[in-house]
Length: 145
Image (cartoon, rainbow, N blue to C red):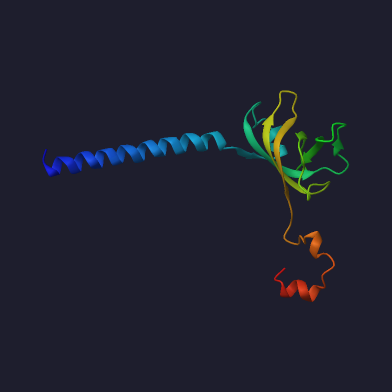
């Protein structure tokens, strides 16, 4: 076989390998893809039952109810215009609390409850870790906080 044909075959094999890797990567990412939804979008019917998504909003005041098993919590996520009941089984982040921001990964159940697999607590730019609470302001500024 001529060198020209060998190079052509090698280029085609390499191209096939890259295309195969691209298909595998795309299929792996499609399993992890989730739309970001707000409570008002869910209320408007933009979320389907069983669809993987992220729900973002604030935890409504007085809505957190801890179940007897010690792991399951129920609360209401709101964006000020609509509210969605959320159920989560697991350990919540330290910053999770009433009137704080949150993002939850999960799926809608047929009864209208969002079942979360993971909860992330959001904080604003003024957040200060509890360990730095007693630190004087001038030391916080020097630390770049």
